Image: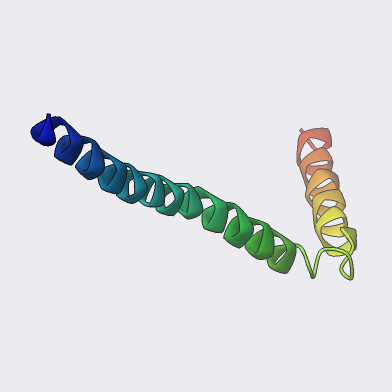
Length: 73
């Protein structure tokens, strides 16, 4: 009988450690999600200020150059 009570007390202590370990493992993806959100907002900070103008101008020049080379033949 005493052995049974001791084993139940040990399982209560072990349960506390397991639950704290589970919470610690759940904090890892939570911190990763917060970090990803912060990085995403930091990486997107200059896209609002800069438009696609230079890239589109370069593409238009490329298209014109390709049209000129095929129309000459």
